[in-house]
Image (cartoon, rainbow, N blue to C red):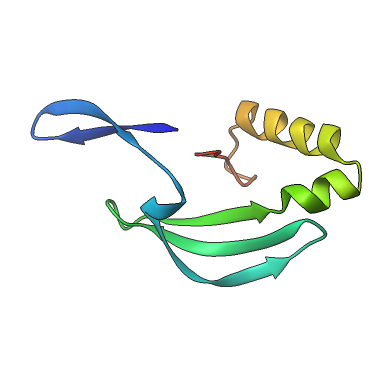
Length: 88
């Protein structure tokens, strides 16, 4: 995944991965994994990161519902919902 970064009057693409964030603490737990409060290392912005176990998703045969959730969250942008900024 890439992010458009602005620096010194120029825009450039930078790679974004799990290592781009500092994990603070676990916000909650669910059937497939955990939700973490994280800070982006470069910008110091706060985010919630949903971490899901592929093995649990496959075991519960929920691949389609997880993929539908990702598709819906990428299309929605609303101040009253949690918006998705990155997915990897």
